[in-house]
Length: 430
Image (cartoon, rainbow, N blue to C red):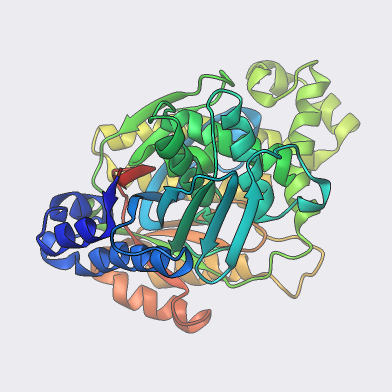
């Protein structure tokens, strides 16, 4: 840990220029805004926790993530391709010598938790407090934790498909790991702890892809077949060098009343697995599944069967995407992105809810992205679907026109050009 005065001196002297350049995917001469963010989060800590520049603090970062391949495959312990992005949550934190955990999130206010009271609280479900309490509880099983103060800022927008909640979970896990665990937790463990908090305390039956994408950094393929030991394979590829930008387009659609739509996907996939005496689809023999389709249609209905078909084909596509990138065959990679998008639309059916046919924001965004791309690049639904975001790989010479067109369709700033960040959850100052 360092004093805030020391941090500001080192920022001004350029001591962290190289690391911040790598962290935020910008040339050194363009990182001043990110140095200002570090200074800002330290100022926020001083303001809200009555500290001065002599306070000893640590600074932590956790990125958002983008799903590149494997749509709704993680909760069936399948395969995904994911990458951390240059947008992140940043925290200035320090132990406070009490049992009270005090976290001030800019724009949301203060959250306080007694670190000695870590059992789930029913009334806290679906709240930020439940995530913090769950992370504390899981880490407290193995490490002596105590109270701390943290000031947090984030430029990962909520509801953007960039996993702002998983980013927050990974950030909190890194804070606790740095302050109380001596860095003893791996980023994979921090991701698993975040998922535990989201599943058990928050009450959302999510898979592990979001947390892993935020925690590990760079582009990685993940095979979740071994539940406690997911296989992580880093993929070395520079998208910008291929002449394409990665754009995430937020449709601005409301996620309200979509819980049943999201929940139906894992429920129906598991119903198919259960028909074979298994818990999740990764345990089902693919050939046996296809041979049993007539019986499964009769027993479970067509949508469950089609969603299982998507699972098996999208897991295979992840392997093909990795191979294409590693062999520098970006054209094949783009075809696979498009194929995944078509599968999500036709088989997974997570583009529209079909309950309100007049309101299809994701479908319209996909159609208009195709119009602006004019046969180049690729686009697909991103994340959970139904509302939210789409993803597009856009040729660099088309980026500005593409962004202007999508912003005009949706709202100013709807289309974000992002970069793959090579570092996941980390300490900037510790």
